[in-house]
Image (cartoon, rainbow, N blue to C red):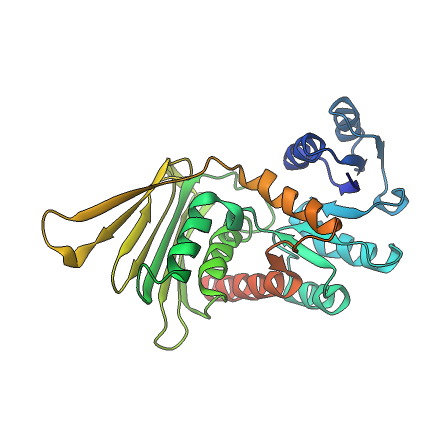
Length: 303
């Protein structure tokens, strides 16, 4: 199995380390935090150093640093790593459009984005239903992401949470429609955001992000001309497919979902890519598109 450099081993990075090791990779960690390095070594890392520029030669690199640092770190790695070592970067690709464009220019064919929801079994199943024309032409998509959110961050929750839903839309439609409108509501230190995206007369997409909700919800509904599909929660065991034109009683089906873990699934694909398999789903240009939509949402909600 390959040797992987993991840049950043905080709370989420430790999950990445765990899964990379479980998949058989040798992992070298770089993190400026001494406590993080200690935990990485205790977790099975082959080495742990302060500076990502001092990592030993690796077959691939995974970047999981704070959003505000991601763009600069990725550009440094692109400049200093020899050859064409692939980079798998936690979403979003950067915290500004300018940085994301610079990464896209320098990292085409080499940088990929870790959009784990594209590997969720429910999202994969809906993609298959659309491809098989079992829903008919898609007319609308709605996604809800509710819960409690730590507001003590320099970027709005949109930058942390909306990339999940934007990448889901990308997985189904092959693109992310332009942002038509967006609005936000302030609740003390938290900010809820609602947005609508649409290209011409194409499917209407609505995303509802709530950061002060006592209800934890990760759900979606896709309405096609011939059928509707709904996921009630991220951990649901099945999708509900309903044909609203079938009359009563409704012709409702439950489609069982695999119990695949999305993080492990995307890391499996990346490791396979290092050995000549298919690339991860999200390219650097996909990552740029997500950042462009996030910036547009920020601009609309700030005005």
